[in-house]
Length: 226
Image (tube, rainbow, N blue to C red):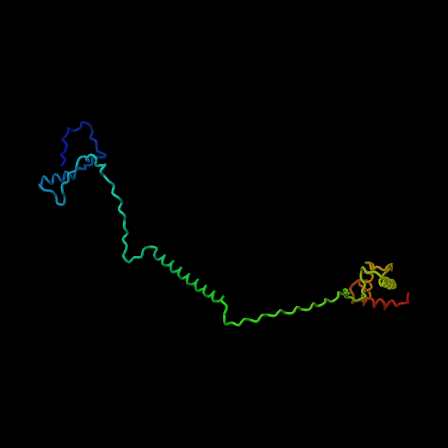
């Protein structure tokens, strides 16, 4: 055990109160306890053996020190445990086998359907159909006027137009100051439309000299009268 320090004479000044006491840590306390135990009992404590520790390591000890290789850690597996990834590999193999079987079955059916049946009776060859006789096209006919064959309209010329103008001149105020030029001009068209309106002629198009307008005009202007 450590011995207390010798007493000193009291300090003449004002006593100082300790704020913080620093005590050195003693690392040899266990060694001192073991030494006192041996002195008191004369024997070593149970479970301990005296070991002589050298003050300094022997010369060249650092060169003799070797680094041990790392120990590989072995995973403890159960004897019946399945290694990781084995289930996925088995599933992939099963899917591949199934796909190959389906493809082979489909190919067999396709080949069987493409092979001709030997027992089937061949169809008789088709005879060529006779070519139809060319039908002669009907001759082109002149377009028929919807108001009749002798219908006159704007743009027509000839003696029939002249006769129409002369008959209209005999009707009061229908073709006033008109000319008998033989041309179906807009003035004659307006005169024919006026005649149709005044006398209630509805069978022909307005301004067109058709069968109904011709019959009404000829009945009012007989030949040989002026």
